[in-house]
Every structure is written in C-alpha cells, then in structure tokens.
Length: 216
Image (cartoon, rainbow, N blue to C red):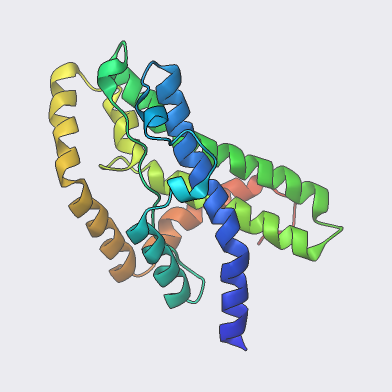
C-alpha cells in the first residue's frame, strides 16, 4: 500500500515539477533573448514544450532519488538553456541577470502557490495538497539554484558583482561544474540533516506566507 501511495504521489508531483523546471529554464532563455542573445531561440528553447527542456540523466536522477527516498528527497535537473554572453552589451552583468531569472521565477511560483493555498485551504483537501507540493517544489528549486557554486545560477549572480579580473577566474570554474554538482549531491546524501538544515529552514521561512496554523 505504501508503494502504491508513493507511486501516486510521484504521479501527482511530476507535472508540477515539470512545469516548475520548464518555466525556470524558459525564464533564462527569455531574459537572454531580451538582452540580445538569440541562441536559445535558435535552439528552439523558447517554448513551453517540456520535451525540449528535459535532460535524460537529470530526469533519471529525479525519479531515482524521489522513489528511493520514499518521497522525502529529490535531486535532478533540466537541460540548461544555451546562452552566449558575447551578444550582451555587458557580458558579466548580462549573465548575472540571466542567472537570476530562473530562481526568481521559482520564487514567484512559490508566492503564487501560497496565494492559491489561501484560496483553497478550506475548500478542497486535494487542491490544497497540490498547491502545497507546488509551493515546496519551487522553494527548494529556487534555493538550490541560488547556491553560489558553478554550474548553479547563484554563481552567475555572484559573478555579476565581482571585479572584472576576479570574474574571469570565477567563470573558469564552470569547467569543473559537473564535479561540483556531484559533490553537492553526495553532501546531501552523506551529511545527516543537511537537506533539512538548508532547504528546510528556507521552506519554513516561506511558510510565513501561508494561512496561520496550517503549517507547523
């Protein structure tokens, strides 16, 4: 019964996660396009079609970590939107704006989900659970991507505030991004309470937006 419940939860969470990831990547592409970079459009990434944004291994990791943790943990990614900073008037600032667009979109989605919770929390348990899951997913996605290490969006945002010479060295860290990403994943797995101490704290802060007494 528990396995059936977990599978049902996964089927309910999947479309919400898909929407959140697609809008996150779409925000990167549109901000880059508005700043003069046509790369994302040329690659067909300015679209709501989720197939164009899915990353094979990122999707596999999402499924494995969610089901393997009993629905208490997930880790994965969508296909990064291609960006060419040479099209920007100021490449450093442009990359910071593009990087900030994704997490900001997740924050806005979390706020929108909180608003929906206010509307439905006394009317429908099912809708309440769906809105809660949308809220949690986007708080976690926004927080994760703001961690200032390559290749996460937070590293782009931090780069926008660095002196030019320091920025060039900072940008070179991207070549090690996959190893850093793997290290972060391992840290979440092996350090007891890491996930709760980081994302859990941010989530609890965001719950101040919710109807009093509903959470905690």
